[in-house]
Image 1 (cartoon, rainbow, N blue to C red):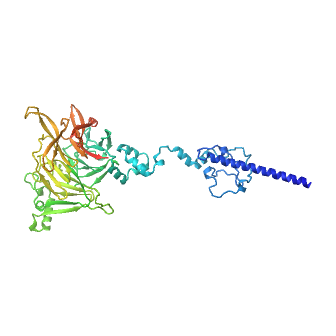
Image 2: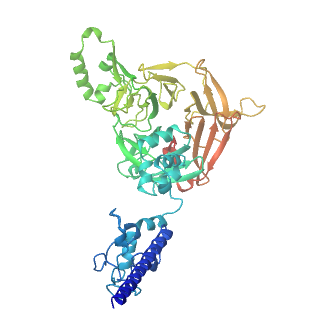
Amino acid sequence: MSEKLSGEESLCQDVESLSVSKRLVRSVSQKLKRKNHRGEGEEDDDTRAVSLSCLTLYGRGGGCKVGAETGEEFVDYGGRRRSTSEETKVYAAICGKEETAVDCFAYGMKEKFWRRNNRRILQLKAAPHDSMNVFLPDDILEMCLLRLPLTSLMNARLVCKKWRSLTSTIRFMHMRREGLYQSPWLFLFGVVKDGYCSGVIHALDVSLNQWHKIDAAILKGRFLFSVTSVQDDVFVIGGCSSLTNFGKVDRSSFKTHKGVLVFSPLTKSWRKAASMKYARSSPILGVFEVGPDCLIRTQQNRYERRFYRSRVGGVSDVYEDPHRLSVRRQFRHSVDGNDVLTTHSKQHKLSGQKGENTCKDHKRYVVIAVGGLGSWDEPLDLGELYDFVSNKWTEIPRLPVDFGVACSGVVCSGIFYVYSETDKLVGYDVERGYWVRIQTTPPPPRVHEYYPKLISCGGRLFMLSVSWCEGEGQIGRRNKAVRKLWELDLMYFSWREVSVHPDAPMDWNAAFVADKSLIFGLEMFKIFGQVLDFVTMFDMSDTRTSWSHISRNHVAHELDAASCMTKSMAVLHL
């Protein structure tokens, strides 16, 4: 009997060892399957170590593991290695046989648990293969966005918040400005539509020859203002608005403004700058680039302070403005009587604010405004200078006596040149603070109904004027009028003809601006009941010295003829 019992016990041990071996083989095979299918987005439920569709989960220590972390990536993250005894331990099925599939989850819970545990895989699947955010670092992405044209850059800002923040930093703007990825843009202001001053800015992308419209509700009802470009911004200075018919171009009853608005095309935003001391419409503007240690001198003769020069036949300014009398009395008590005729000068240093970079090569700009029409529609000979750092306007000396009405001006080689309707030329030195009369050879002949336009291009001074062209072989006969481009030799102060504009001068108020080596012109006129517009360009670097048309009749067909008088144009390199 003892031998028989010992034989049965050995047989049971063999069977038990055999069953353990089968379970071990099965667990090893399941691990191999998981290893082979790792990295794939989906796996069959029967290949998982723990089934999601069945509650035949072998719970460690017993119990059903419903709602437990059942994904592969979340299995056993505790870092404790299982012993061989745990791996070979037999777990009893708690709800049926091992092969039985009973779904004990609520409706949709199985999918919810799977998506939560495999969120990273789903994100990688949903992300496009060419996504910049996934595969490119920020510095590489920034270099790619730098090279986009302005229109594409504005569209790229709408992709996501990250791209918008990358392309809106001061560093990005500076890199784009210093690089070679910008192209000229023309901005047309002050157009009139249906009798009202339109609050719309028309912008021309010269490289793509495409016109764009920009809403500017802040300019509705404002006309006869002047614009100038400073780096990436456009300054809108002065202007008029009707008091009786708001929004219309009505000179019978109007108000003259002295406010200054700044428009940034890159952000399509507006801001207000300090207002001028004198209200004026159609002022002559110039922009100086100065160093951080530049001294701005404003000289004014004390004799002029005591006895102001009259603007209207023999009547003193004291009777025009009663405040002049009080100023004269204060000045009389503040100075000694022996130095009445001495020159009083002020110096304003362009110093940076606290925490601002004041390096020597840091660029700073000042805007100068002279001439224009005052509140009573009288010509002004006063001048003002705007400092960006202090955000203040400072008076500068008046235009020279008997200069006439200023009609055009431009900054060239550090001198602000102003041309008058009487064909006189003066220059203002911002560092020395005084005006200089410039005697030139007899000025080019011109038709006085057309105002000349001064242009600075590449450190050279040009003027566009309209003159009569004599017929061939017939001296003194006026055949036709042509617009010519003249250059002033800044050493010998002599004019020479450079080129002839191809179009007939139909617009007496044509707008001309320069950008680097390019000169752009916009003519707008009404003929046969229709308003037409032509945009031309002259390249100074081209040896052919000829004009080319870049746009025809794309803007003015929906505008009024009054736009020919009220328009103004600025150019930016964006």
